[in-house]
Image (cartoon, rainbow, N blue to C red; front, side):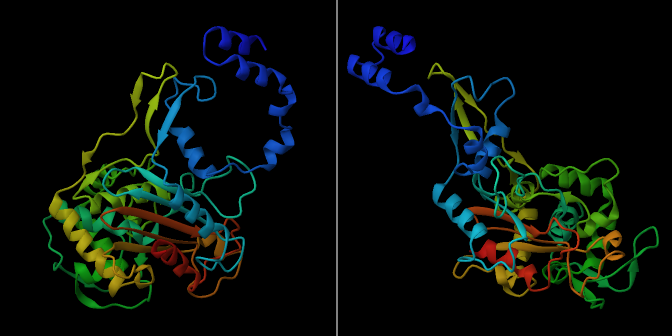
Length: 379
């Protein structure tokens, strides 16, 4: 009542508004702890990311901030519907998890985040921004072929020998079909996702130059993680990072860190804090062009035809990861089973990265389920 009286005395509200508010029972604005725990707030995955981007010197709950975001409500609601129903994409069970990020290719502004399926708690685990899973062959344009175009001046017609081969330490590497195609172009090697040419490309580039290129796309390796197996995506990432990296290929080589917050206005209503990351040049425009030109083939004649968008020129890359040996020694998995399935792709307007998989190590992504990430991108 004292606050309302002060507001009236300082001409912030009318006398009628003051009296109406004073008549409102105080418990009208109270909620039980259980109600708070049981409720999933609107756009929860998106809001969770927004909160993580607020500079630490501000208290989002006390400082009266006005936070402007890039949220596209239609895209967000459609994303949540896709994850939590079978109306858009058919999931085979309720246990499969997924994370998806949709961002503006040119600006890095994230317009929708799908943080998981069938979530029951507020601020729960966000599979779009927090998951750390091996990215599989979605890494090949980033760690292998992009650097080869950038630093070695290879063309898309550069020939590589797809043949029995080993890592530098002598461990054999296989293609997904355990077969070999002999001399093939970089273009064919990438759109058909051949592992042996990818490793040879990384070896030609060198681990240091590859990591330099990877870092410019917002992906950093943990200590000791810069290894040859990253040629086929042994390193970990999340959909937010991958959407940002792929966007640079669709933005003429310019990288923008993915972000949800566009600006913050302080409680005085005047002071604006510009929070948008600055654009950086990640690669030559020719590098971005050549990668994009091949990745369009992935959707038309390569491994990602289920991700194609009718009438829309799009580019992208599939990725699957093997089940770790420590799991296969405990459980039976059929041929073609994968630990994770990814699709990362873009148009000139949007960049989207999708991860699908299971928390339960007994569960696996079957050969047919590996298409789900592609269907999600397409939809």
